Length: 306
Image (cartoon, rainbow, N blue to C red; front, side):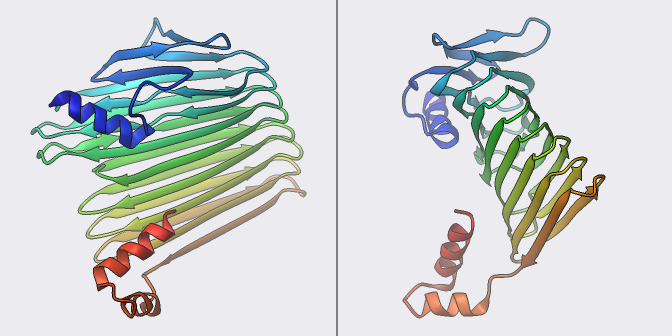
């Protein structure tokens, strides 16, 4: 039965139904379950703490790295440090994420600290999904931390998703950008029940011509609470944009706190924040097509979080 739970978790967080092609490291219940390296990508276990170093050689193109984590053991708590060293002129996709199945009475928790060193003119697409399930009284807790260092001309795109089953989470991201580098972040979150989710994002735009674009979309249902904090520090002639759009339902609450600091006369920074309920005319239109109110709400939420 545990193998079935782990198979389902791998599918949910990394869309894996079999071992992937390319480099990968699969972590299950606190241990490395499978690993593969390639000619251009090496994965090495850390010797001073729990975690791995992912070393991507300069010039590596069109390769992927999968590093999912799954927990199906109640009461397991771990903190893992993963460092990514991306050489110059690379173009790679990294698929991470964590899934927790907890049917027991103890809390299960995964804290992952991912640090990226992205070389000059390299491109990285980073996909991270968090997922929880199980009917036990123990909580499913995740606290991801992402640190991004972008060298001259580097580009990184992050897609982070947390749609189901995580009781409490603190999602921290910090970044520093050098000349002509760029960072794009797309975040999707949904909370239900009494869940709590906090996003804390800070970017230092240090290089001339660098840019950062943060887009967060979230839905808060039932009695859940969300807190979105973003800080853009324009320290050079740069462009920065942060946007938080949230749908609030039932008795939930959402706090959005976008902050901008311009330390250079040529820093161009913009923030947008919008929180509101589902528009009544949207519900009426869908219900006129034969959907129930609940089905109409689900359609609108799914479309909003696409």
